[in-house]
Length: 114
Length: 115
Image (cartoon, rainbow over all chains, first blue to last red; front, side):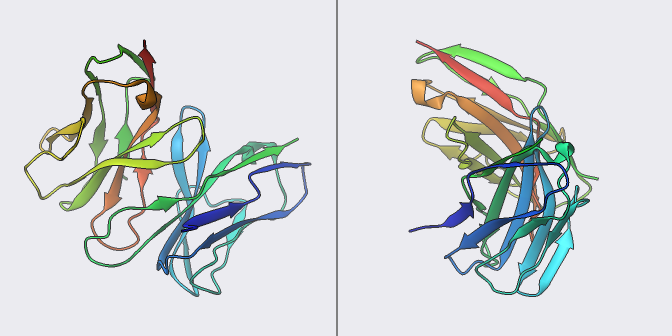
């Protein structure tokens, strides 16, 4: 069982570069989310999606774009990387079924912007 | 706005002893979920235990149990018989009862187990 797969695991970018963090899940989950983890601040929600074609902003959306063309994939795009976006990024998915409360997380992407 | 606060950045405990990690939260919702996640050095987020706010009974999972005080908006995690493998960052989180369940996390508590 693959679960939630994030690629790459590590990435170094130069300021101003763009890139896409990939997230794929094979559990047919409707809900998917992106979080960033910074020291002393826990995880904060960037964007989320409740199904293909539907996305919305979380707590810290500035500088990031998302789209959801399929149920399986939920890529996160950095349009012009800034040092403030240095962080660990987590993708998560969850079923919409009643009683299904557990969010499954990917292994994270450590991004450094220099 | 929902907030989750973990006031203990670091905790340590002797192996086989019991330790309690604190968490307080604030929400205007009447129905919600509370979670404790463990993050070992591998970075993987592992669900330890969950609590439905409408249930008065405290959740337990083997050596892990919670003390849920809804009126006080407190949700502490007790780890009994601590083991070396329990060493990790622990995050308290709150999520919506319905919908996308956008999770709000606390700052985390780093737990060290002393042999």
